[in-house]
Length: 250
Length: 55
Image (cartoon, rainbow over all chains, first blue to last red; front, side):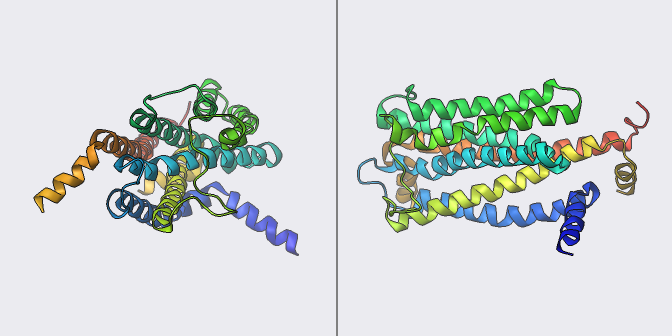
């Protein structure tokens, strides 16, 4: 009983016309709270939160930098999970997720690197150092770009998806390296500010907007990835009857 | 009021760092919002024009 209910759900969810139809409103339900939370984080970061007693106002970059960096890791991990689903169950939506998420993840990795460099100049006296945290994050950007390039290089969409899935899974080894880089190696980059256990090194007035920013960025990632998936799905199914009919109808 | 706005924009002397970081973030977000919407519209038009009917 339970298995057949699950199978039915699985097929319904895996059905591409069904997904294409509902994903539009799912995207909206992610966009609104995502933009509200990120907007609150930006407003708090720029206006409400007092300047840092050591760094002054430049520390306000934190409210962009940390959510972007978090998202760069979250996005790649999600791609690796989708990679496993792609290889094991051949679920088309998982294939499409990887392809749609890669450019968005790459954008936010780029944003984490650039805001970090801008912050580094007045704080460390340099835009860039080849230390563990910065270098491993740069490698993450190359991994994202690798997935994008791989997808574009292989003509057959299913073969391309399997290759991208494999690269996502192999590359995810870099995620814990980035996370622990500030612990394992001496680095200019400061240690974790936010910790799940053992208390965070931050006043709660400064911390809440940061958490709101991280959650907001994650919801925005979901919204944008859903839209990317819709485009990818339409492209893959461009010759199918349901797409033809739907497009003709309006 | 005008003074406090100016003070806010000055960001304690770090204006160019803070505003360039937030500016680039805004550009990245807008780009990522527009990219799929434009691609979606363009692809729908191509399908409607029958570009993929028999090839």
